[in-house]
Image (cartoon, rainbow, N blue to C red; front, side, top):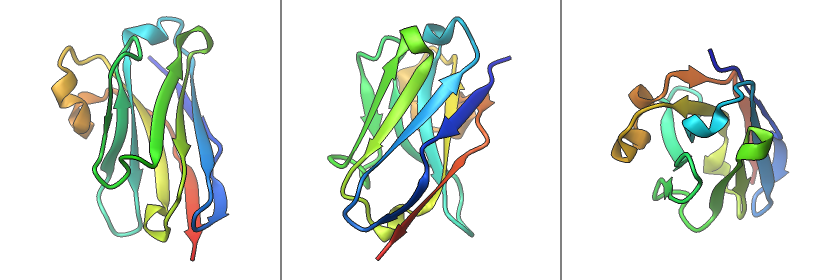
Length: 126
């Protein structure tokens, strides 16, 4: 069982930045690819970004490409999401998730992830 805890959410003005962190309880953190998803009110959970086990490859939704950066520190069992140039449409609850799928092409889909955090709210005001 992997326990994930997100932090770093909050209220920010459009154009601002936030850095989300997700700490994992699992000592074999490096065995998991990690992803960030978000869910706005009344909408489904959507893919934001993912990083492979070693951190060597990253994947992004088109809507955040060039503005968000996912990274990980395996020594600290932590994955990050640096969010710059935030827009009101980025407002959502952000979730981190852990995947043991052997296929990186599946990391865009919620079904690839076995463990989820509780989420952290990000609100971007216009």
